[in-house]
Image (cartoon, rainbow, N blue to C red):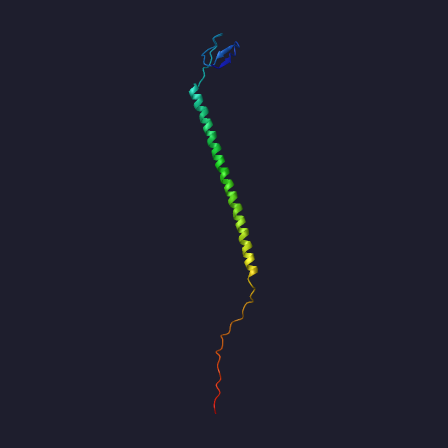
Length: 113
């Protein structure tokens, strides 16, 4: 049973008493019972736990997004490197002039005279 000091006489008085048993001063009784106080504390703990869980989820999502961003940068760099390697490996071809159609080979026959 919690005790408190009476403001008038200074003696210990139960927090559940309606008045000081020593001097008779009206004493406010505890407004919440044990069950109510426990429920209130549990509610606060659950609320704080939910806030912590949400913050943890957000941190996890941010970490995953950062991981994906880094992977995308690596893939982009690798792709650019491959493209550059392929461009270097290809022989450079000068642009061809307009192609003329091939003339059919005509054999000249010797005419017998």
